[in-house]
Image (cartoon, rainbow, N blue to C red; front, side):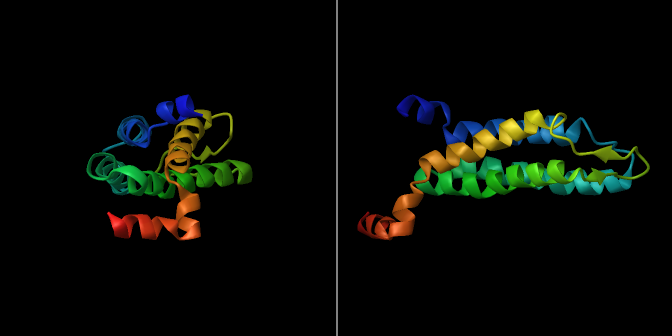
Length: 138
C-alpha cells in the first residue's frame, strides 16, 4: 500500500492531469476560429488553473481532499456520459458520441487522480471528527 501511495501522489497527478486536460483535451482540440469553441474551451481551461493552484499552493490532506473533489466528479461525468452515449457538438463541427472505447485515456487519468486524493485524504478522520481535533491542536 505504501508503494501505491508513493505512485499516486496527489500533487503529481494534479499537475499531470491539468497539463493533459489543458493541452490534449482543450488547446489541441479547439478550433480557435470558432467563437463557441473558444468560449467553451476557455471556460474548461479554468479546471486546469484550479488544479495547478491546488498542486502548488495546498498541502497534505486539504490538497488530497480537493483533488478528490475536482477529479472524482469529472471521472463520474465521463462514465455517465459514455454509459448514456451522449453526443456533443460545438459550432458547426461534426457531432461526437461519448463511448468508453474512445474515452479510456481520460477515464484512466481522471480516475487515478481521484484515487490519489482518496488514498491521501484521510476521509475516515474527517468523518469521525478526529480531523478537526488534530487541526485545532496544530
